Image (cartoon, helix red, strand yellow):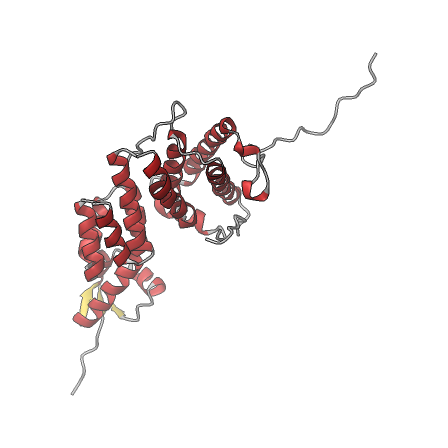
Length: 297
């Protein structure tokens, strides 16, 4: 008769995303191609869970941005073809908040970095590598996390694409993201125009958006942004505050007063937000906004 007692300790549930470390830190677990593939499946599964928990029909974009902003800096399981989706210094992924969503997002971003490091270390440039980088770029664009999507995008276009070409449609998609990131987030219009010409990109929305940014045309910017797909519109959001600020300054130079609802509709922001976020010092008089006081003689 055995004297062994059953353990009263609960078995440890190990997170598959935490079970392997960074290649740059000496962990070699992800150098095995099969483990890379299973690890990628785990990342995609976790991303799906996280997005479903964060996104809401009413406020999906802002909820995603809010979730990612609390971090300090830092589809398809069959085959490896790149699926078409609808629609800087060492990074620290420690969340400032302590909620489970913050920790989950931190784990996802760090796991994407682990996988990218392993693919670079094994010089993998096959269809699976294209799928991984495409997924990371698209997903982290939605997370508004350039520290993840920017290096992945450059590696995809500069290293993987020349060795294992993307389809023309896919190349156009990622060149568009590159141009938008340069123009809207980095505020580097000269480089954005150069990249557009280098890849011979022909896209009316991109042409109009670059024209709007160059001329400070808020109306054109807003109209073009509204016609873009979700990923492109998310990248264009980086330029939104600067373009709005310029529009507000133009109104201040051109008008004595405006109806409040007309102002809010034009700048796409409520009167309260204009006061709190944009520092507008104009006076409010009922339904009117007094921009300039008439000088008495």
